[in-house]
Length: 229
Ligand code: CA
Image 1 (cartoon, rainbow, N blue to C red):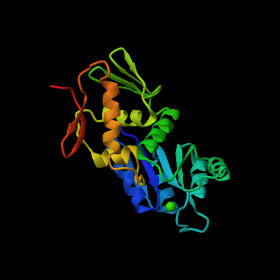
Image 2: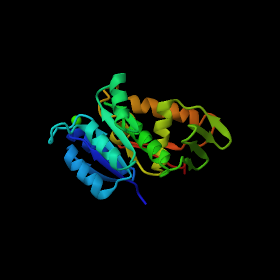
Image 3: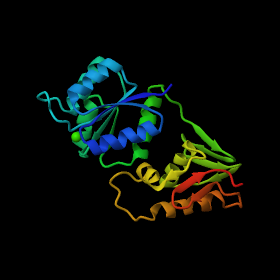
Image 4: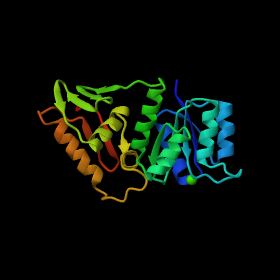
């Protein structure tokens, strides 16, 4: 059964980004744009997890994300991931003191958020670490180790994220936009050929011992993980 995640965030661009990304990963998503609406939904629907923005419009005096976090904590132990633009140590401590389980500083890439979501659900016993496989390729998402057959493959953090994304969506063509959202995030202002560069790195590593290609280019669209036919 899919996990239910409540997002409380007033910034529409980020809310859309999260809703799209989490829905795509198979989570059931509810959203609220202020603390009061968020608390009502949380009490009504008992989500498996809450993603909570710190800076919310105070429709009720003092009801910012921190206060919502305290009130959620008063009534239960739902995992809470706080989003914030604040990155000082004191702020982090205040967030955790209010009962947040984890803390993500904006801007962030979707994969970074998905990794935190999985870790929090795992900690609360709702999800177990997975070994993802396709053909002779194996990726252990707990240890971040990859193998082709018995051959171990060393991956950098970004290569791991990229490969994990493909393994979650085998034989499905992933567009450049989807890959970009997932691995680099909504605020990434980097070079436009970054995806090509990383696909090339990954192919080199995956085919180093002459193995058949698994990551294929779909011209003009994107990339797909599939067997070579
Ligand atoms: Ca906000």
